[in-house]
Length: 49
Image (cartoon, rainbow, N blue to C red; front, side, top):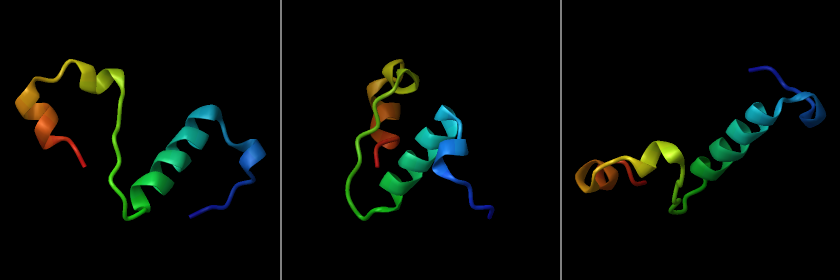
């Protein structure tokens, strides 16, 4: 894995790093995004962490 200075990362890369750090913690996480807004209740229940 390469190390990058935070100031050289794009906004998308910074968001991915923040999401990865959040998911690596041993805590529940609620993800809200447009990708999840169109899911039916059963599929949404399967995709929760």
